[in-house]
Image (cartoon, rainbow, N blue to C red):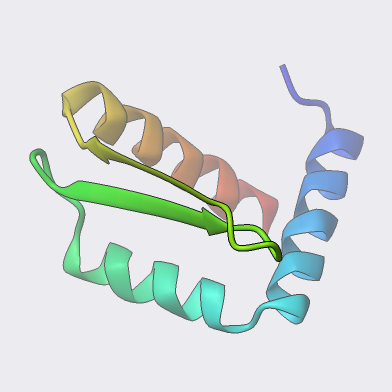
Amino acid sequence: MINFSQMMELKSLFDRLARSHPKVPAFLKAVSKEGIREGTVIEIRVTEPEGREYITNLRVNEEDLACMARLSELQKNMR
């Protein structure tokens, strides 16, 4: 279980990420506003400076939705 100091550290890290990459929170907010539902495909692409790429995707299932809902609850508790 996460204690208060770990939660505060996590919030600090999220805040730092948001300051460094301000488009990411706006993107996530827009996606969550429309709602991710079962069957949605999420693709992740990582491109290294040398050009090597790693790509994967996942089709959201019921268990994923429950996990995302819990993460959302934890995020709200950190504010």
